[in-house]
Length: 101
Image 1 (cartoon, one colour):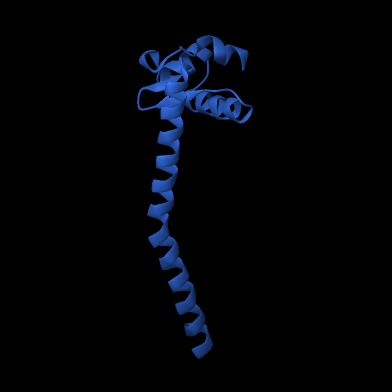
Image 2 (tube, one colour):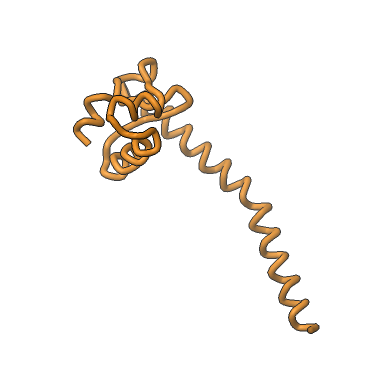
């Protein structure tokens, strides 16, 4: 993970995309993404957005990142509700159909 810290730029304005990060690390873009995920779980403060990946230059960038992640998580939960509801309705319908057979 030390290499990851060495290649990640500081500040959102200097962010690098996944493909470039992979190149700098000598791994595929997917492997770079996994490395970032692992490093975050180990406590490294790696930020990301449409700009790419970067290390925070200040608390303002950290706050913006947390706000964005919370917003995305909530959006995904809200989007999954109708599908979950439909699954539950389908389960009930299947149960009734099985009882009639």
